[in-house]
Length: 157
Image 1 (cartoon, one colour):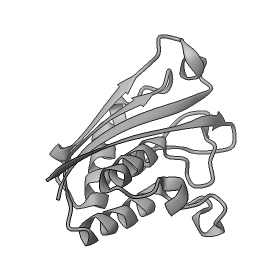
Image 2: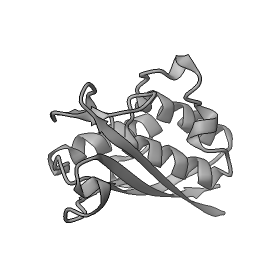
Image 3: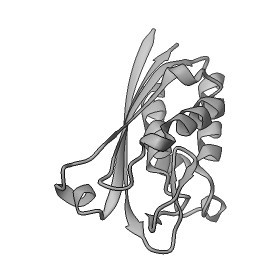
């Protein structure tokens, strides 16, 4: 049986944080505000996987009220979700994602992001796709207030 999951995440920019997307630190004057490292791409992927598995969302699995997740790398959280996936006897066919940000441009970093995600999930890099989009200056992303990410995953059970 095949199962599809969809994930979304958004975080606002903050002056005193690093910008982490797909487990990659991207040089930029602002980072994303959140309890963990605020990696919107990984968070969207986690929610997509959890959705396809029929599980709760990222906030219930890794609550922001639990200090053990404070500033944690989202790659660590993705590895935990990978274990859940394996325990359920499910495997990833592919993941397709979109990062929405006016700035910075993410294309120079997508290859490293794919590598990080594939490694965390024990899949091939070719099973992960990452696209970057702007909103042509519209919305909060266009006003450079934050970043959002969308992910869809196809699982095999």
